Image (cartoon, rainbow, N blue to C red):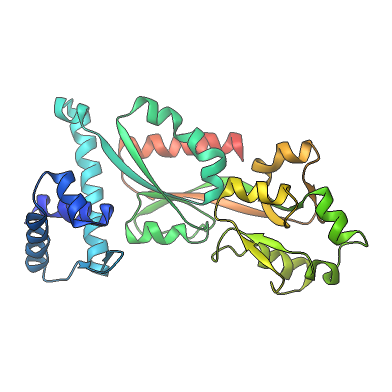
Length: 294
């Protein structure tokens, strides 16, 4: 029989990325935290936690954490169904994977009613929409927004809608760099902006519409809101979703570099296949808001 207390300790250490902080959360000493994890590793016969900076889980550790979180959700659901007073006052923590653009535009609207009515805290882990899948696969999150419709074993997949990205510039930027028209020659000389090193939308845009690699000067702005502001200030061209850029486009502060040339990125909601009340609430809320917002 696996010791549930030791499973919780491993989860807390990984979530907090610190033995000291995990000890504070669990109200035990740091030495006790270390002993619990060592005992758990010995009982299972596997190293579960790689003690590096940042702390990492082994493949076996990922499986253990994923199983612990699923058991916790089922236990919480059972307690609520039975009307347990202790569970009604307990705060449940859930981790969700999201791309930055969804978080900045519609995800919080989807979570609003749940956060107002349920005793939960959320841990939103942000990654590129092509990589959030991996967070779910490793068990770091219970659900994720992803551009992939590839089903993960033990999870359900629901289509959310389409996020349309357009290449936008300020009118001044377009006049400065493209007064003689938009072509492969002129775009080579115009700086672009990308979110971070994982962002490949700008590369795809150049490859698709100009048959060019991304070899011009390129800024990096790892903030969705500042990314839009950076483009609107006339410093670069960039790919921005319609749902975010609509006000600026309507005011004429941003214009399309090549009208009609855009990317439609389908988004999907993947979530553990657990028949819990919280899973149902999350899925219903995201599908409802995505239908309205995307």
